[in-house]
Image (cartoon, rainbow, N blue to C red; front, side, top):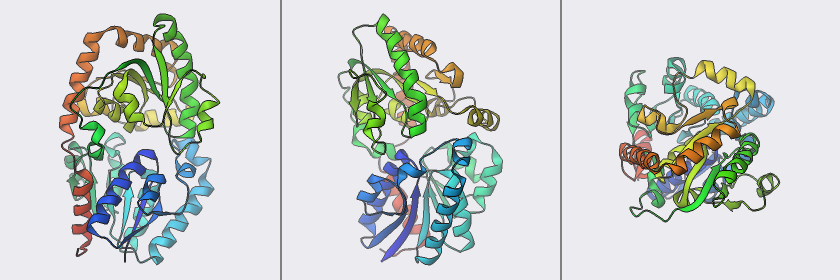
Amino acid sequence: MKRIFIVAGDTSGDAHAAKLMSALKVRIPDVEFIGIGGSLMEKEGLQSIVSLHEISVVGFWEVAKRYSFFKQLLKKCEYLIEHSDVECFLPVDYPGFNMRLSVFAKKKNIPVIYYIAPQLWAWGAARAEKLAKCVDKLLVVFPFEVEFFQKFGITTEFVGHPLLDNEIFSRENELHREKRIAFLPGSRTQEIKKHIPVMIQTAELIKKQLPDYHFAIAVSPSIDLTVYTKMIPSNWEIHSNSKALMRTSQVGIVKAGTSTLEAALCMMPFVTMYKTSPLSYHISKHLIKLPFISLVNILANKEVVPEVIQNNANADVLAQLVVELITNQEKQAQMQDEFMKIHALLGSSGASARAAEAIIQTIGIVV
């Protein structure tokens, strides 16, 4: 039995890690996975030691409030890594926790193969230098990351983006888009509670100008549905498949993160928003080195989609941007042209298979 310790910390990480686990199982039939993940990883056989919902928090203040919990969880993971005879530690994104665990694994001479690199190009060089000391190989999903991380002496390989392994992104025929505005508030409870009230207010303003449009919200499988239903109007559509929602909606408001890239791959014009606690925002503002927060704008190195953050992310601003986007077909077309360029930039499907092969070669498993 080959055993791999794997950790993902949010919904997108769970999805990407599950695809990678599936690819590894094809090549290593007797592989066993322990660690941390969500329902998709558990379906692939993960023995998860904690619920994904319990660790899916973001922001400096939000994590600090649960310091004791994360400290105990880190110790439990360290014990399992040291005493479970694992072939390697496979961190998937989630840098705050996974980089600490990588340091421990490296000290114990356990190979560390990091999948989906921490976005350290947004945070500066100091953390990249730290990553170089605790990672044997880095498997990245954006082509520009190879040059960035290699500057720090990190063995880096571009495997492509796992989103392209999803069939919905490879469909060439455009689906019919309804007069619907999609809201994607995020996959964490704190994000949902910050974003949904603003989205509701925004919808009310939009309805006054565009009465024939209706509204829909994407819900996360890791969050109890009642969290949403207690907040949103009863006439809103509820969609558990966010990608299908974005493929058939005319425009959307999307929380900053992986979902912005998914929206672009779904060819749905959108506005990016993000709100967090005042303390987390203040710290992030001084640490982040990039002019954009949306992955779409970062990859394009220009503003393709509007970004509204913190106090600017209010109903008046959002409603104006959405109405302008809906009523300006030329602007929608220009945005979609840029989305097509980003799709081409990310390469082809097969990222999960390429990552699995790289892992097997790195740790020297004979299959």
